[in-house]
Amino acid sequence: MRFSPIGFMRRYMRNEDGVISVMAVGALVLAFAVAMIVIDTGAMYSAYRYQQSATDAAALGAVRQIGEAQSVAETIFNLNEYSTENITATPLYYVADPSLAPNGRFFSEGETASDGTLVNEESFNAVRVTKQAQSPTYFARLFGFGNSMQVETQAVAAYTKYVSFSAGTRLASLDAGIANQVLGGLLGTTINLSLIDYNSLVDANIDALEFLDALATEIGLEAGTDTYGDLLEAGASVGDILNAAVDVLTGDTFDGDPSVATLALQTALSPVGGTPVDLGDVLDLAPIAQRTIGSVGSSLSEGVPFNLFNLLSGTAMALGEGQAVGFDTDVNLGSLASVSGTITVGSPVAHMAIGKVGDSVRTSQVAVQMNASIGVPLLGRVLQVPIFIDAGDGTAEVKSIPCVPDGTQVILAATTSGGTVRYGTSSTSGATISIPLLLSFQLSGSVPIAAGGPKDVSFEENEFSEVKSTSSDVALISGLSGSTQITNLSVLGILNLTPLGTITSSLLSSIIGALAGLDTVVDSLLAALGIKLGAMDMIVHGTKCQAPTLVS
Image 1 (cartoon, one colour):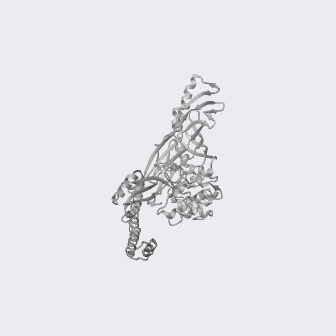
Image 2 (cartoon, one colour; image 1 turned 90 degrees about the vertical axis):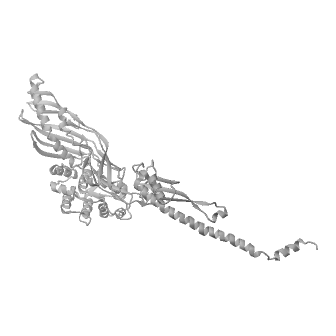
Image 3 (cartoon, one colour; image 1 turned 180 degrees about the horizontal axis):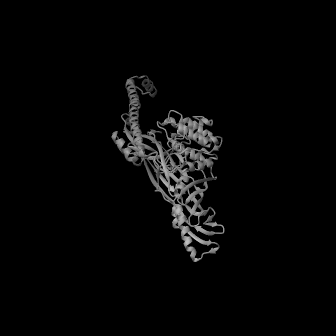
């Protein structure tokens, strides 16, 4: 029979032998493909889910001990029966700024964060943990995908830490009479508060976040829309500040009897209620400036304290920038009869803050021109001796807030600027003192106020609300005695004759002896403004260490 290709092809196409086998092979391949999708993908998802849980736990644990983040993360993975290979724990700085895209809220070491923080190991508040592992395949290897597939997980946990602190609050030596003159003068009114009134303000801490929310309501800002930064820039008056503080004082959250503190605050601030004030000169809100009003307090189980005396003195200093405020006081300490003069506050700076690591507050620079009335028995007269004090500002910076399970600790770094105490005025170094037709002489001498720091000052949790200083009290005014000189003495027109040496010694002894009582006056004068010569006083009012939370 002759072979016909065409016939063969027709017969082959009509032949149905073996069709089931072909279909079976196709079905088997499809079954393996489905198994790969269902079983291998399911296994990989399960591996990813468990690994992600371990990664979350590692991030939450590592952020509690950022300095040992890598070691902590590896330990937690090991406890969850994972290899410690291919684990990376990276400390970061996190800004809770809703205006930024989620991935834009993290900053690495050396970068400048959106809130102005230069990121370094002291400012880290978050940890990113990344883990890579291999998940075995079962059916995928039949299709050439290998025996395992890589699973990568990542988690970022942040630890929000706030501290409420003040710089320059030396309340132990507060003198009500001088405080009334100084604070009243800065406010442009007359204050008549007793020491009991001042102590009631010193002892009264209100919730800073409740105060800010109440103040926002006073000036018409909206919760959930406007930010605390908007509040700082809004036009607030002294009356708005007063009303917001009183609202919180009379609320349910205030601990204690608020009646005396409320009356004292109203007595001091009501007369100038319509005066505008820059809230940023009173309170620093750097860590929460970009958060919407009402969004912070609701996330904190405990409040952040704000001291009422700081509110009063800070408001007074903000309003009194550059003003020469007069004061006078009867001393009657030996030959020191009285002291009068003026005190001028430099540029206003917030000396009360809700801060994070790296934030700082300062005391203001001040210039004090005093006129001390000194009795001289030899002459039977009272001499008027001018003394000028130029005191630089001081800075307290948050260096560390190590929130640990066994108690919170805050470390502030204190720095003081230099200055001088000298006879004379701001424009003269020395003074000419005379009794017409009887006596005249030149008085000179000065004592430097040394700059110091930065010096770390640690506050344990049981030391919150206590005043701590960078150094012990220094009697700088009486220190003038070592440099005091009298020259060009003239008695009855006779200049610098040898017999006048006895008179010179007697004058020098009288002046030096009188100055010993002047330190108390100067300390009380500066205490009303939270300023201390040659040192830095600080108070930590409280901290809030939020539990670590996953933020990515």
